[in-house]
Image 1 (cartoon, rainbow, N blue to C red):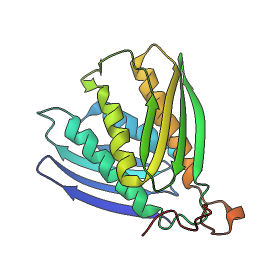
Image 2: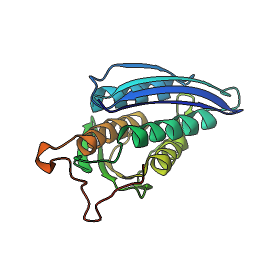
Image 3: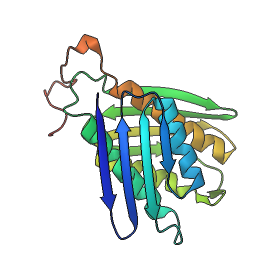
Image 4: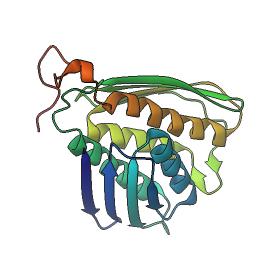
Length: 198
């Protein structure tokens, strides 16, 4: 079973996170931000990842540090849980509808983490959540996980729907990518013979 536990404490946040890749979508998530809780619950459920996150952050300032540091910690957990990446599919992609919204997500577990987006979100906030923090989440996750993520919103007029489709799509594309493919027989899915140093 591939899993990781990460504890990360700074002057801005105190985070404990547990991840099981071969999970059943069970979660216990407390971030201090209701909207982020919701998105991470969707992520765990749609990815079939077991995810336990507890974060105490300086939310009296805003949600920036909480979102950024949770994404950093989650990225580190995926990096650790994936080990040397032997046998994984490596790639995953999907197009996800959410009512009027349609979002495309593609993932490459490449060791060259990068976030590339063509997302148009027609609002500055959803509740008390600044929508610019969506980009902050994915930038931070990609940087620490070594995973490349491309996201494009193909249509949509409701900010909540677009962001929700994004997190659902991210979960399902990532699940495809991390899944062990028996046809690969534990080979590293790269002609270089290595995807990352562990």
